[in-house]
Image 1 (cartoon, rainbow, N blue to C red):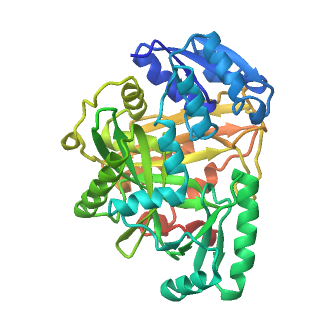
Image 2 (cartoon, rainbow, N blue to C red):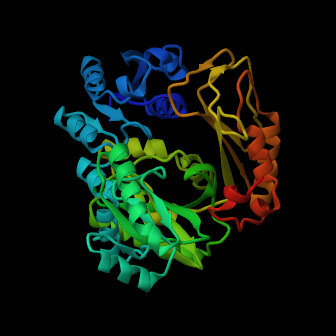
Length: 442
């Protein structure tokens, strides 16, 4: 077991990892920028060390500074959380070279799954359904034949993409060349890789993802699915588990395929396989080789602490949970609480003058803010996650509405009221919404 873990992140996820470590009897080291000196994860860690100025590039993305901090504090593991360096292949390699355990998959698995074209090949080899696509776009004849087969619309995607960057939807044939060129330019700027490919564009899918957990001994289990279809500009806002649309047979079918694919590469740790789901069919999009923001809804319906299991697997322990132990019970919903204007979505950093978080049975708040805390302008606007759990979806929605009413954050703008409007809408209540929900919601 690890003796001391450095948490290479900030905010609520740093606090989440810290709490798991404390329950496992592991000492923690918090890194922080100059702007985060008074952050909650810094206050609660056993040790803390500043790794640079306020900007993420100079601190939380500063690999030499983080490795120096790890060496100075003599840690034997580094947990990257999500975002920042969590899916950075080189970061994982450097950690491995320093004989420190990266609490995540091996660097080669980050590399393989980080390239969407390579990831799709692995899924195809394991009979995981994928969106019809075209990787070789050097010949216009290939492109025309592809369009003839799948019909418009299609989508141009960056091979190393994420977060909606390097993506262009094409509805007319004469838009293809411009779409490819602009997607390439954006991909080069965002990921330093201008390789793009084409896929059939699904018009009204749901976004459903499968959570997996595996160890270094070849054991792999799945922990059900999450519906993440409520999104704005490819950024998730609300997630829930389980999905209203999946039958147990369909759930088992896709879960078994995911297990097979993950086993085929010897993957280790937690990961998520993301799919588009339309007309009762799954289409693989990508695999996230890290802990997801929305992992709490899976924890609530399975009763399994994913962060603890991730740490235990990284320490070399065999999974003590088998697939037959996994039972999905009840329903859980997560709302991402962002410091931003609820209509314009402009970020709203500043001092929180009043803060009261909701409580009661089945209410969980993952957040690192407090009254008097100043939300810095340098990072992502998400300041917390509100999660509710109940025996069924209807009760879970009612509990979420009550919890959102109780949640008080003054001094800055938040999207709490927006969440209330969404969850009380008839379309959300029906469970039949798709990824286009936010584009028509008002």
